[in-house]
Image 1: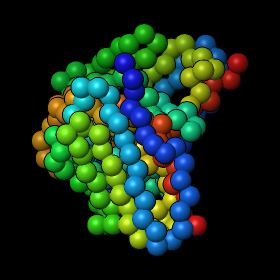
Image 2 (image 1 turned 135 degrees about the vertical axis):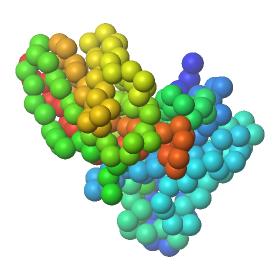
Image 3 (image 1 turned 180 degrees about the horizontal axis):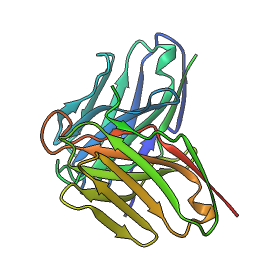
Image 4 (image 1 turned 60 degrees about the vertical axis):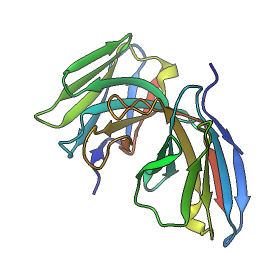
Amino acid sequence: KAGVTQTPRYLIKTRGQQVTLSCSPISGHRSVSWYQQTPGQGLQFLFEYFSETQRNKGNFPGRFSGRQFSNSRSEMNVSTLELGDSALYLCASSFGGVVKNIQYFGAGTRLSVL
Amino acid sequence: DQQVKQNSPSLSVQEGRISILNCDYTNSMFDYFLWYKKYPAEGPTFLISISSIKDKNEDGRFTVFLNKSAKHLSLHIVPSQPGDSAVYFCAASASEGGSQGNLIFGKGTKLSVKP
């Protein structure tokens, strides 16, 4: 069974640009969550999508947005990039139950903002 | 305010001995706890979990203990192996309240197992 796939693995952008990251979940999983990992803040929850609807949202500005398609694939978009957006962005998928919420992670997209 | 805390940034253990990683939480709504292992340049890998209705869960060399009254959990690795060297994250979720469906992570403990 294929795992969670994130593309691209690495990205370099400049301030002010926008970026779109992609995530393909494990087959059968309907929930996709996104996390940002930085050395200072650790792993922080961005948002979760379930059946094409945002079900939960973390404490990030509106420049961070996402969507989920009917095949459960998800994209995350960051507009007007700032230097502080440089981070590892991780996507995780799960069956979507709020109880016993085991999430399986992709390898991440490393975003560098110059 | 950190809801999940791993107070030891690093831990060094001799091969064959026990590794004990600790985690504290503040939110009493958390009812499911997980441990993940992470190697550099990879995503976190799920290791083991425990529901709040239990106080212990075992899977091979890994055992997680939960003390609800102290809001504390620990991961025991016995025996430790060099391949266990990685960063370990504790995570929690709630089936009710503001954290349902997402995981709240600690900042991790880097475990080094020396041959």
